[in-house]
Amino acid sequence: EDAPDAVRNLIIETFDRTGLARAAASSTGARAEVMLSVDLVSFGLTPSRRRAPARADIVLVARMLDGRNRSVLAVERFAVTGPAGDDGPAGAAAALGDVARRAALDVARWTAGQTVRPGSGPTGPAASGG
Image 1 (cartoon, rainbow, N blue to C red):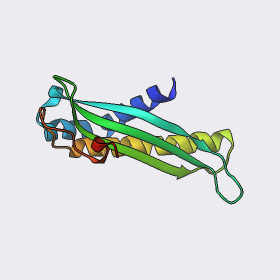
Image 2: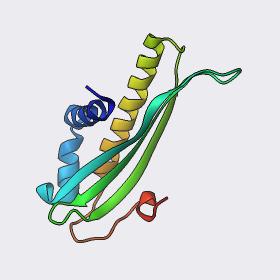
Image 3: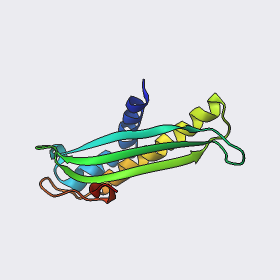
Image 4: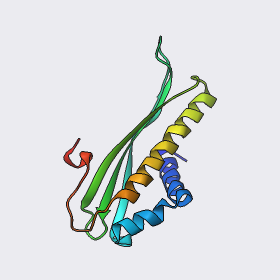
């Protein structure tokens, strides 16, 4: 399983596990009329250097789309960074898993909190490219 598939599956599992899928559906009031698209922008480990400890990073961009015409209703960028205990494989895997889980929960919470409606324009800081 490659990183984009693993992150997508983690986001789906997070929605299921937390019950936020039901909250997202009820907040939009549209269910199948609103879709979620998530792009994995970056995901990796920065090794330790001098005094800077190793860290794991993930950046996702989530878009809520009008299911009828795929126009963007809301956009949000999620960047999560966390410490890696060491540069070894076990520390790297644990740190990457931690930031991915935190980002998936952030996406699920953001989605559940949206009150977008099909036909409305884009909202959020990333909607204007920022």
